[in-house]
Image (cartoon, rainbow, N blue to C red):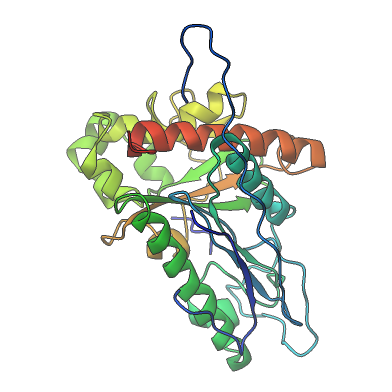
Length: 319
């Protein structure tokens, strides 16, 4: 298994010594369609270190970029452990911001946002404490603040929508197959199983969207939510972005690299009974992350897909 190891909006930045309080419609009769008002962007107020950034929202959606940072403070040792991944996910921080803005323009509601500004060679925002910090005690407070606030943002997002929310984590990969790898914590081998085997073994109830599968508000089956017409993979593919798993690409081949999720997908998803379902989106570079134009175009598409997904699968906004 390959793991990738409202009322107002505010931005809070924190370093190791700072903690924050826990915190479509159509028209009829020829009437003009009036777009919902776009909420004002939150005002950034980074402290002198600015290691972490959190922005409050008003939608049941959390957008996270844990590996997009570029800061390399000289007083923080590099991570050098044998299992430490140290390459950053280029342009995912910018992509996360763009998704938040695009979603706000579309819906008038702003997703919650979390960004790790530290480069991955210093701190990994998607690992348990020891590997995230490589055992460097100076980072213990950063890790605790990062994870505690992800917990808080997820809980607040769900609480504002009747106890259900969606956590989306943006990553980047450089695998040979240029497609979006959607991680639900199911392994590539599991995905290569037949629909009957997956459904019979309750695989999706052991995934990071277990709550969505159990609720089944839309009536979609477990396998349909994984790689059928209602799935995120289908929506992405239909918008021109190849994705796995999806109806057109149900599983990685045995020789294909594939990231199925990581520490955050477990901790902030519903596998262990959490209020939010979590999905890891591993984005290829060309056509998604490579240029400002690509990022803006993909962010707008993804915002539309997430709006549709929340409406159909979560019943948001409530009628």
